[in-house]
Image (cartoon, rainbow, N blue to C red):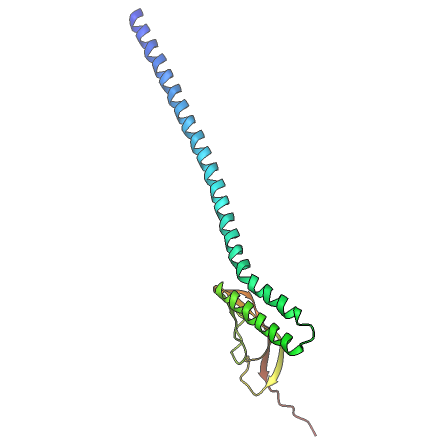
Length: 166
């Protein structure tokens, strides 16, 4: 009976040791996974920062030509016609540079008012159909199908007939 009890204790002891070994292995695996996850988070944060920096770098490189043109235009102190043409050139350069990155002007004049693209600042009685954009007060822009700035507009409203009781 004593031999049986000793064998039982030995089995129990082996089972405890196996459980402890298993727990230690599981704990090691958990710590390894936690460390891998932390490294993954750091790597993803670094990669996203690099992507953001690279995007800015390309935009800045593109705009350097515009900056050069501003310097040239400002160097023409006494030539008013040349100055205007220089500023016109710079505007064209800047706009085409921004277009390369997905910027588009929102066309509004003569279009039906669209609250997703336009912001009505004024209304004016007009012979045109109601809610037609009469004038762009400030240009709006879309970047890759996302509205960056709504076009500020003047919108038509139907003429009201004035009746006099004379």
